[in-house]
Length: 334
Image (cartoon, rainbow, N blue to C red):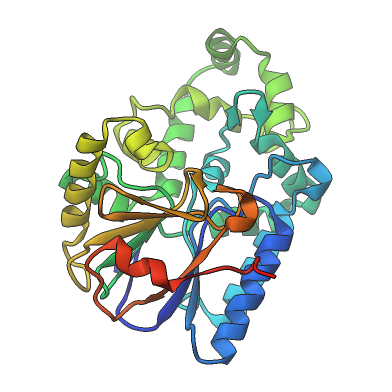
């Protein structure tokens, strides 16, 4: 079995994307799933990543309570019944990398909450994130992911990298390499690269308390984890790709087709459609490149109450994303 791919041949999956710390929306989707499950209308819940990092006020960010509850639910129902895919907002915390966009710094608040929760719970959360799969494949011919296809992930070589990706091994190798260099030299290089003070940034981005903190050196990984590290480059592109917004639509359509062909190798059936979130859309969904359903369940739906979930019969063959539209539902209807 692949480390990063889950294959399902039967059952109905309720698919939800990008909640970004919205505890009220999460509660609605969880309760709808449990209701459908009790009625025999849904067998598993698939959360497609980016559960964390609200752009709203800090007191409204329920990222950590959402993760706590998802972990509880998965323990109670089993990992085949509650499936969480890795999103780019979770990815950065595995590697202790900062995440910002424009004037919004996403990662510091979550790191502070983890620090306040204590080292044992922090280790439990990071262990959970470390083990998250990247993709779901189904006998319906529908793939599920956080992000749509990227050029590197569409190649067989990229598939080999991602299917068995080992975060822990990469982090150990990077840390071992950094440990061979003097700390003063590394901090100076960090300053040249970022223009910031290492100690101040480690405290801000990672909630590091000082040089005696066991995580004091973790922010130094930014010096080694970049696209020059081949495996990490594939990983980064796969999770931060902007899909057709980064390339022409014709080129992206060919990327989607190649991606589905590449990932059909060893799948329960040929994968013909991909469902993903990650990018905002007007309303709750958008059909992209004739083979992708972009689903927005809350944060990326405009307006946000237009967010939708998808009920997917993992055994019933699907030929096109249009066939999925009638299986969309809302938890925000009056």
